[in-house]
Structures are given as C-alpha cells and as structure tokens.
Length: 277
Image (cartoon, rainbow, N blue to C red; front, side, top):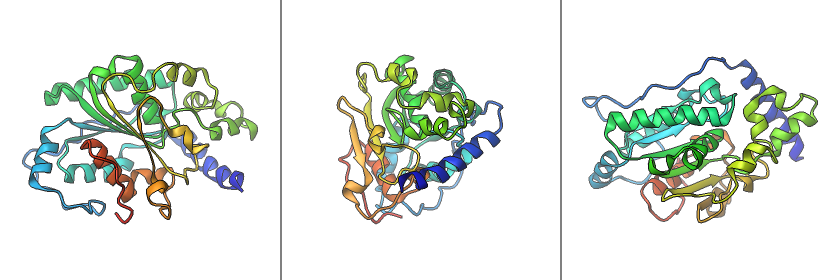
C-alpha cells in the first residue's frame, strides 16, 4: 500500500526534476518597498496580530524562506506573503540549479546570500524557514560553514535530516543511482553526506532549532527521519491535529503548519491551530 503511494509521487518528482532548468537560480530579495501598501491578511493568519507583534517582527531578524529540490521561488510566494502580513521582512532563496547538485555547494551559495541579506538590512542574524532539501542546505551552512553566528532560528519543513528511502527506491526501480541526481544520492539513507552532517551535535550553537514533519509526507520516509536530536523542538502536525492531512508540498501551504512556523519564530510554545486555513 505504501509503495503504491510513494511510486506515483516519486515519478512526479523525478519528472519535475529532470525537466527543470539547469542554470543556477538565486531569487533576488523580494522585500516589499517601504512605501508599498500593507498586504491584505492571508487566509492562514487566523490569530489576530497586535500592533506590538507586527512591530516586533519588523524590527526582528529578517526571514529567509529556503526552497527545496525542484522548488521554484514562486512556489513559496504564499508562505512569504503570510510572513509579511505578520510583519516580517522576507526573502525567498531558490536553490542553485533547483537543488539538483551537490548540497554542500548549494550551502556555500546560500552562505553568500545570507551575507547579502545581513548587509542590506544591517541585521546581525537571519531566521531560516526551510522546506525539504532546503533544510539540509541551510543546516549544513549552520553546522559546517560557520553559520551559527548568522542564524537565530531554524525551522525545517519535511526535511530528510536522516535521509529518505524514497531516494533509495529510485535505484530499486531500475533508474540508476537517483537517476544521476547528486542531491538525491546525498539524501539517500546511509549516504556519506548524511553521515558527515549528522556526526556530532545535531543542533550546534545558540540557534533555536525546530523541525516540523507530517505523517502523510510522501517523499520523506520514514517520516521520523525529519526529526532532529540534541534539544531540537520536533513537531508532528498530527500529534496535535490527528485529522489534519498534510503532504510534503502541503507543509508550505498548510495553515496549521504556518501557525507552528509563526510560534517558532516568536519563541512561543508550540500549540498548532488545527483549524487554521
């Protein structure tokens, strides 16, 4: 039964990846102009913001939304819009080559992007909200490229922190080692990349670490491989909201998941709103 669910999702993912453009693409900062009118409230912001909360977000760390494998920047526009309604200064980072290549190389490019955001805002640190592979890219930056001093909060959404056998199954299906996609090979359970990334402390520095996962994730299996150890806040959406159905891509759009993101960025206790749109 599980294989019947995974194979169609995997086929779609591989098809999208193989059809993706191969040029490196880093989204320019998409911060709204200072004189732009305030955006209309987003559907998922079901808890009213006070003026003080909005002011605190605007004065706090800039937020970088980091895309995943084959995730174009525009796919993260709705999430960025929700964050802006809450007062945050937001950038969207599209992985180079849509995340097809070497994850450490993508992390080095991300390091430069973080430096650009910090320089343009004068902020000492940024907060990171990262989807799927983006969570590995940004975590590698924090752990292996000196990013502990540049990141205040890290929130991953369905990131295969300990790999996914969906990546391993591509070889089983006769498509070779992840159809030649380097990042897929690195996200396979047992890869040398993951062995290095997960050696030692999962959550170094003073970064506040949050890892969000969902039972219906089609691409991260087992779903608990999206967890982090060593003091991270791990959130399973269905622990609080057992009837909530959220897939891998849905973590970016789901209202309940967004309430978790907002609480993590505000250093609040995590209490998912099961009825958020």
